[in-house]
Image 1: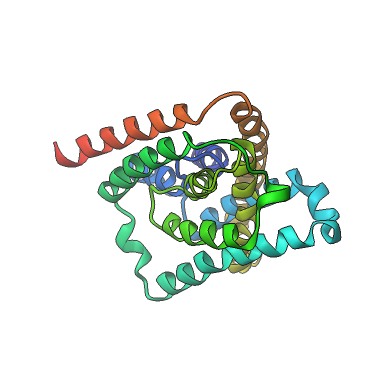
Image 2: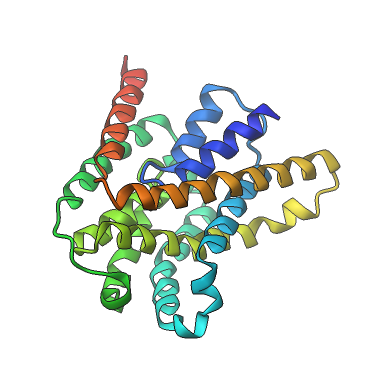
Length: 252
């Protein structure tokens, strides 16, 4: 039960922050020898995050026809990562990147790129400037998030900032882009969650989903408030420190 709480906390906080949720879940499960991080638990955690971001942006989603062009661009932008991700999973290549050394280097390198991008001029807004060209560029950047340590939120915010989007608008683009990705993960794993013959596992799945939803919702809300006033430097410093610690543990 404690393991479920910790994994839900890690997923909920790190999924929408530019620090990589997958790398933190891998580190936590490896370092603490967690037994609970089965595929169904992992999917449950992502479903919780999916419900949270849909809940937070429910007004935009309910008013779909007023925002349909925006959502078409969001879906269009998500296609490259979903296709490449599906191919990597089918070819069983995704596991090649799931090691601490890769996570360490990606955490540092893309943390530095996040720092550079955050120095760009703040002027573009999602409502007026998020066109199909921007969607394609950010979508191609998002493919890199398939590598643990890169961070889906981090790389999409970085791409949007490189395109001169305001910090809050870059984060909103990143959050909206998570809907198709998390939705695809959720649909892929729904059967293993809700049609399990083991009642105890089903209970753990529902608990992890609920806790992940709560932590994700709080993270989205307070992250947007934070970056409305401050830069992304705090997350850059965290990434570099974490990466250096992981490199030390790997090579020393």
